[in-house]
Amino acid sequence: MTHPVIVVENLGKKYLIRHEQQKNYTTLRDTLTQGVQSLWNRKRVKQQPSKEEFWPLKDLSFEIKQGECVGIIGRNGAGKSTLLKILSRITEPTTGRIRIKGRVASLLEVGTGFHPELTGRENIYLNGAILGMTKVEIKRKFDEIVAFAEVEKFLDTPVKHYSSGMYVRLAFAVAAHLEPEILIVDEVLAVGDAQFQRKCLGKMESVGKEGRTVLFVSHQMSAVESLCNRAILLQSGQLYLDSGPQAVIQSYLESSHIIAHQVPLKKRTDRQGNNKVKFSSFRILDENGVEVTALQSGKDYCFEVGYKNILDNILNNITLSIDFHDERNTRVMMLKNKFTNDLFHLTPGDGHFYCKIKDLPLANGTYRIALFLSIGDNEILDYIEDAVSIDVDGGDFFGTGSPGLPSHCKILVRAEWSKASSSLSTVNY
Ligand SMILES: Nc1ncnc2c1ncn2[C@@H]1O[C@H](COP(=O)(O)OP(=O)(O)OP(=O)(O)O)[C@@H](O)[C@H]1O
Ligand SMILES: [Mg+2]
Image 1: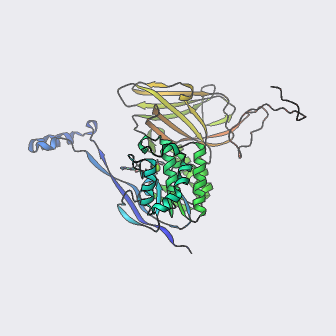
Image 2: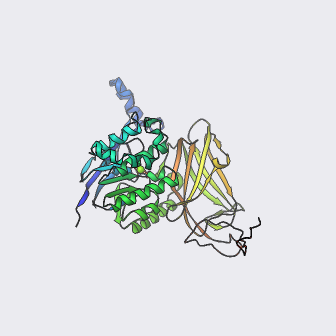
Image 3: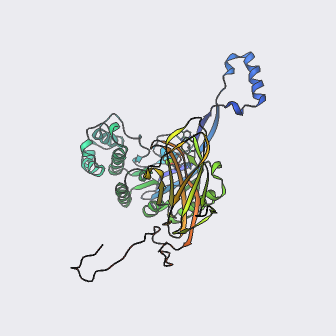
């Protein structure tokens, strides 16, 4: 029996959230009390911001053995990154404790682990030293790291001048190559292009095969399924399920489905962004303008997205994205107004966006829709990962009655087929 290399016991993390008190929520009693207080103590007139306790992790216990590759999954805000930060000793737990045996290298959000003023080369040495490696050991790995990260040209540039892609490539290369006994990776697949993502997955797989321990947070279920031999599902900071990846992914997808259906969009709390503008509703209309709940391949639809802008000013350069994910949480279709330069400006108050499509190219199945709203590419206003879930059921995309092969491929494309009988013949277009 291998011994556990990570032991987590009754772990809890508390944050204090400050709320600035808002005038419109002040009761008459509050006003009177404050008035009286102000007579006695002038300092008290200034409203104190209230503080609320918030526990992103609660009473979490589990053990991880050497050589296990564990996927940690859960909805936005479930506490995954908080857990990884505690395991990487970037933040302290409030309750409980962790025990870790071995050198940990972690790749968390951009910004941790690297010193912005130091060059790529210096950061590689710094990180190696933090991991307890000698200069000779780091030197031995140096070329491999630089080649993996593809940053040769910028090795002597301070990393603060790197693009986010370069930064993450180098950070991942350092974390994965400096022979840590435990590798902790948070959502690296969200950044970087598809080729780099494949490279990272391949590297993590080989790290796992070398008998080292890997902890990996991802929203990409296919990656968790192919890479991990165990998965942990966190829900509101608590351990919901700890089992084989397939069972845990199944449970996660089922629970998201229920939430997406039961709680109206405007009341959802599993959202990100600054929420100056919030999604308030989502409907799908067929070609006659009638609301539908299930779709058919090959038909025309209009997606209606309601919003509320709580600001008093007009916002320009608004990007909206409606993303469709299949049962494995792979994004298979993306409707984004930016692709066609149809950027919006928003006046204060409520309104609706409309997105019309022809010939729905999705095969039968259940899809989760993520809604994303931002100003340009920078300021995220609202993002709901599992906003709604829809079924595509039936339809006749090809006009032949064939549904395609939904279990193998979700995207439908009409193709023209022809054949030339001799290798010398050329195809006529
Ligand atoms: N420094 C902080 N102060 C207050 N609240 C925080 C802080 N850091 C995180 N939180 C909150 O703790 C909760 C858990 O956050 P965490 O980043 O761990 O979630 P996550 O599971 O990684 O989510 P995601 O999938 O979106 O990355 C969230 O509600 C978040 O807003
Ligand atoms: Mg996170």
